[in-house]
Length: 248
Image (cartoon, rainbow, N blue to C red; front, side, top):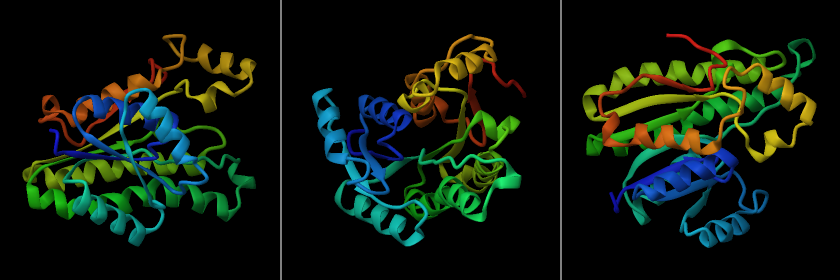
């Protein structure tokens, strides 16, 4: 595994960081991607991770740009090593009731959260096919399963991610490549914990486990799907939501 690379888009975010750490602990060389190193303060992030004992690489690529994704993936393959794991974790929100949602809010969310999955996956797929091995893991959302007020754009994109997952899983199942989704519920990232306490308490009251999830709990699920223990799992969606939404 030491020569195996895992690419995590949105790797500098709260969930992305924990995924990166977990995969590193499993022996992967982790490349975290950012749309802009300066905006996301990648140098500070790298220093924090190094202090915690993690030696990551950061590459810049806007997931909405197909050519930029291709160039980044080729560079990683040429200079770092074979990308055996791709985690599509990059995502944004532009919440608004549909009656007030202008086209820019729709386009921004769909192009990042859904087109970004295509742009990254399409560019890495030939490399995985040539090796007859790969793990593609898409970070969807509970709101892609159940919908959410004010999130028609986000819910559509996250539901679309799993449709993509199920279809691609069938296409590459004979080629040693698995494709799965993970759908987090409400996770206690710094962004979520910054929400007004009354609103957070209301959210938690809806969760049967009566708590928010931890970023490490998403990372543990991703790490399992990336491992050989999950060889026979493909086209699946793994909910990690404390019972907020259940289905089969």
